[in-house]
Image (cartoon, rainbow, N blue to C red):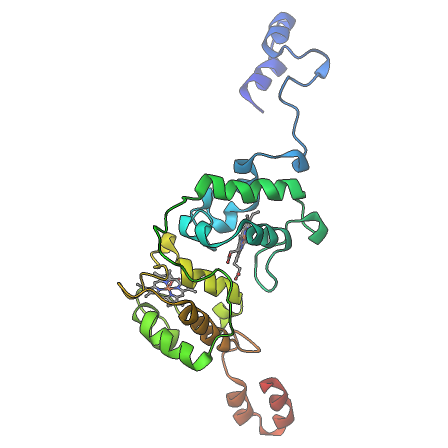
Length: 255
Ligand code: HEC
Ligand code: HEC
């Protein structure tokens, strides 16, 4: 109970009660009517209620990327953001927010969030003439080339074959890869995670920005490391050695 309400409830003089509360007949105070959730059109409120748990307060990053990263906002289009927020990203924890996709936000609210991200956090000119790789892949990546590219640009922090080192975590780990989309990998490879000290496409090897094709190839290599049953401690082949009689079953697992 708030202090005022407490005082009102126990006030001895009815006069005090009236003047302190001033709301006869239970009428709502001006401006105190609750706004229906689908009427909220304030960017800050919508972002805080729907996005900050994963993308961080003020877009500064959390379990997922910092949406307020101005480099990200120069590379991605408003259309792409709107589409992701409306429909979510299948196979990841990014939810669909559009009512048409089972979410709770109106199209107008999704527009407010999308436009607000760019107007509040975008910084035109931040790339200063740099020519970044495109947001979406233009070609199919080459896995073998991607492995070499990884060695050149990523292994210094993420370890040989992406097994992890002191500076960067194990990103070729099947459990990590099971929860991230190819575009999610591409976005991080291009924009980095400034919130966590991960460089963008220009900073992996200083003075040697990655090309469009190198980004595409490195994502193809990472994606090729996904497995059918992520998180299982033993590969199916090990399983087969110990279960000779169930050979048929383990063959099935390997597919
Ligand atoms: C200068 C060190 C450095 C280099 C080089 C580097 N990264 Fe990172 N990277 C980091 C750090 C630091 C993080 C944040 C902490 C973490 O998750 O490892 C990170 C995070 C990531 C993540 C997100 C991991 C997660 O848990 O969400 C991905 C994906 C990633 N890097 C991909 C790459 C790729 C691909 C390359 C090469 C093109 C690369 N990184 C090069 C330092 C680096
Ligand atoms: C439960 C966690 C969660 C919530 C809540 C959430 N996101 Fe996400 N979001 C993610 C994850 C995880 C990804 C990366 C998915 C992937 O691997 O591509 C993501 C990706 C995105 C992307 C695409 C990034 C790219 O690669 O271009 C956008 C845009 C985005 N989220 C916006 C939002 C907005 C806006 C909200 C609030 C309306 C929101 N998200 C709420 C977890 C969340």
